Amino acid sequence: MTYTTTNANNSLVQAFQKLDVDQQLALFWYIYTEMGDSITPAAPGASTVSPQVAQSLYDQVEKMSSEEQLELQRDLIKQKNSLIAREYGAMSDTTKLLFWYLLAQGMEKMTIVPFPQNYKLVSEAEQLLNEVKKLDFGQQITFFRDIVAPMGVDPNAVPHDQESGL
Ligand code: 45D
Image (cartoon, rainbow, N blue to C red; front, side, top):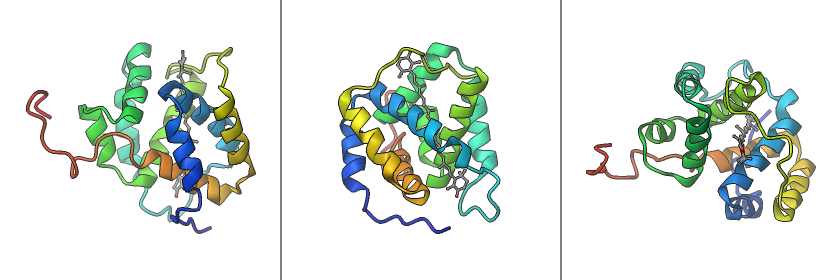
């Protein structure tokens, strides 16, 4: 299968980025529950993915408290500067996908703060989920890659921060 990186999904990506941070995380979760079974992390010749890099970042997050785990995920979306945000930003886009996939699996195993049972999507997010469901699997991957690519902090694009020393 080939994955396009065209901007065909651009309006969906923009709609996604307009949601507030918690709604983005919640929608993420629902997308995972839709795509989850079709994702095969061991896909042979899987492009620029580096499982060791994704795993080592994941291992750092797994050691955190539930509150820190949630805050970290929010901070990645908000592109807040931190050591992990920069490590994240230095990974390839496909490795970023794998990292989020590991987090979602950690949520299922309860080693990462689980998704609350009674949490509701706002109608904008609900609509977006329905649009995403209509995409084929390859387009869903492209969409999701476009979403996770700009998260965190790209250390090549942002100068050294005097205050935090990062
Ligand atoms: O209490 O080429 C709220 C690879 C607030 C292989 C919350 C791949 C209330 C190579 C925010 C709701 C597999 C990498 C709490 C390709 C509250 C390759 C928390 C493809 C607790 C193409 C909510 C990989 C939270 C793919 C924490 C397609 C929500 C990967 C967290 C796709 C949601 C991965 C998360 C997906 C969602 C991951 C972590 C769809 C993750 C989704």
